[in-house]
Length: 419
Image (cartoon, rainbow, N blue to C red):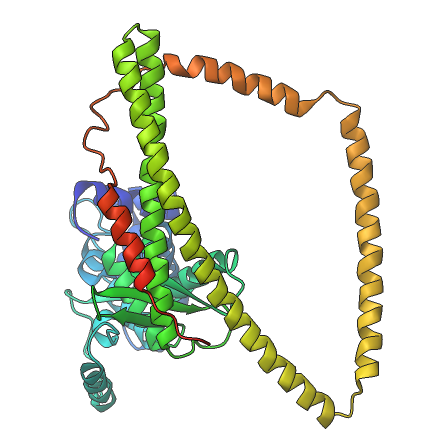
């Protein structure tokens, strides 16, 4: 996080939100502020525990509010909590060292970068094992907040679970970066998550360098990266590019239609016809892109289904082995399954009865859908009167036939191995 005016305003607002408006924070000469900013003295056991917990909690809450997982030590120590006159918390260096000793804070320099070569990573691990004592936190260090990275990783997994039914999920590096506040944050998060086995870094340099991250959507650690993962990453990247092109086409199609309507209303029929022709060209290009996207999505779905089938077969084998070991018969299992089916059927009858009551109550009211369609038609009648600046989209990038052919050829050249 840099030192620009906008960013300074962000962390000042975040600190004020956490400490509250008025009170001791806005009284630089007050006894309470000076007591909180005073350095710790004596041995660790003599430090006031409430004061230590206050600064630990405040630091993490401010970083969480800023959606940061890391921050330069110089900003945390000398800028974030500075008061008028250059007054800074003298106890903060000791608080950071205490958090580091407890494993709540890591240093970026202590993490292993998965984007480097395997030999370099091995040397880094060996050098870390050889280090006996840790150096104090320096101004140039990048502080990594372990708990905040784990919180963000849990959020990412929850989002991915909503759209994936497999035990693992692969995302492109650009999508992974979008989950974090800036490149620095995403990089330290990638280093930490790969180091503790919660993610795997994927890179394929066969043609253009393609990067991605493999997540586990279950509690288990992420399996090793396979050749199939590399092929899947290529497909996902192709899918994202196609979707981006389709989004551009959709926007241009909508803009052309609006401009055609505005031109027609103003009496400029020549411009209206030109915009109509443009909209038809965009519509035709979209029809060419859509089948390509559908093909890619179908292949990705087939890979996911094959992976699920493979795991189901393995689970069946394990289940049969367990049944044999514990002397459980198939008849007993079927009997229990029948009981479950009966319970599910009963629940469905209850849900159907409740649904019929809701539908009956809706029938007695006016036709909501019809009223909504009338409202939508009225809004569409008003919409063309909104003027739009024709220069604002002049520099918009248009997909051309070469892009379509290139993506089509790349898709055709993708070779997937049988599972």
